[in-house]
Amino acid sequence: MYCRRTLCSWAYSARVLPTRTSFGLRRYATFHDGPVVSETNRAETTLKRFWKTVGIDTRSDGIAVTLDKRALKTPSGNTLLLPESKRLVATLIANEWENQQTLLKPHALPMTSVASRAIDAFGEEETRAQVQEALLNYLDTDTICFHHDDPQPLVDLQAKYWDPLLEWARTTFDVEIHVHTSVLFHSQPQRTKQILGDVLAQMDPWEMAAMERATYVTKSFLIALALVKRHLTAEQAALAAQVEVASQIQRWGEVEDSHDVDFHDVRRQLGSAACLLTNIP
Image (cartoon, rainbow, N blue to C red; front, side, top):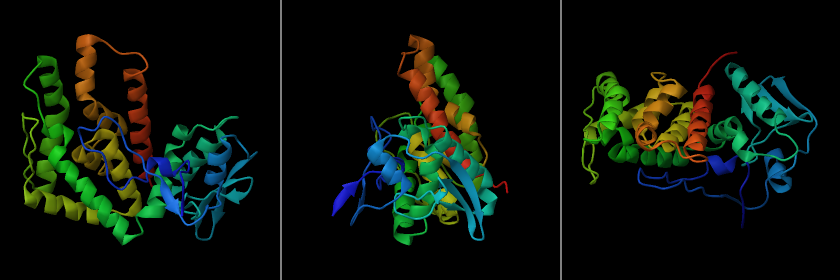
């Protein structure tokens, strides 16, 4: 048994998602009984562009993205095959690979990684159940359920971005959602978890992959759910997720190479989740 971390697996292979108090995302390698021969594995090994052409191949069973006429594969060795309704997704994935220059940049493949996650993971009941449980745990530490009483600019941002979102969730799903001003652990009602767990159970693999990514990027189950249910755009979800950061910037100013990098990274990740949900043949 040996470990190989591929370009796609870094973004989705963690089985336990980070908590709200995490300082960074922990990424776990994908374990195989031997190397999976795929374009993503090869790219990981060389870290250099090894293909000349990128294409989209329409087949009887779906749409494949090709590198030098060879179908792109996921980290688990599955063909990265998309349904006809995901043609826009296939185009975005192809553009990611076409835009890679001499040296590869794994962070520039968000569509590839989230689509691969949907294909590799969410057809398996065991993995799906594990992810669903991990996502539901976020309800107890959800970013938008912990409010501050000061400073006033932060209070105003919470009211602007979080309060309407909380009301949407309560009304749409007929659930109680408790809001707290203490950082001590609090639990959401069991009925709320049951109902929202049923919502997760009804999601298809594409929605689950988007939900998982959006949750660990925003550290909020409710922001992610609003994105997946198309109540929020990727930009709106990013604004809600970065309320505390926005307040800090208003008060202290922007930290170069920190706040600005996070600003774009959050939007890149949430944008990939939102695009995965599109169905445009």
